[in-house]
Image 1 (spheres, rainbow, N blue to C red):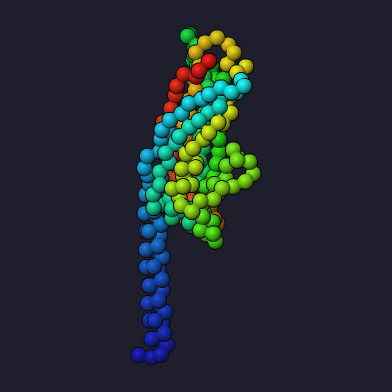
Image 2 (image 1 turned 90 degrees about the horizontal axis):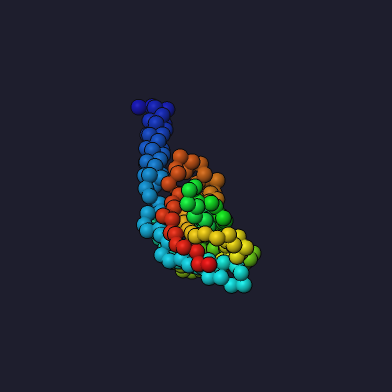
Length: 202
């Protein structure tokens, strides 16, 4: 066998090995994409409002899921968005309920690889961000909403029964360029809880 043929065979073998490696990587990425990255309980555990100086303030406890896929995604540079939807409705006897107020609280969770801490950006806390050493602590903070103003008394001055309901959600936020290419086919990073509703105190 000539040296040229030997080189050609080595090159061909290297190409086969490279293709096999790429295929294995694609299969693994597809498996990750099909997996449920936000599996687990996402639910509103409790919610109520109190009235202070004519302002209705919301208090909510949310249980957000924590799993290995979420940890891996955050450490790979994915920013997750945590949303709390709030609606206030007035009951109408012969028509659909009237919408009185609809507001959304949007917060973000990311991982800072240099400090190895989880970062929560929360508009309730102004421009400052909070950091936590563990994901559990960060999710506990995200799941605790205290005294968020959602409407004023003048908005519910009309006679009738009012209902307030809340719903929590998680979605995929900012991606790194590499992950944007690899995960363009996946829409698994979206979850919403059931609506949690109760009568608004007057």
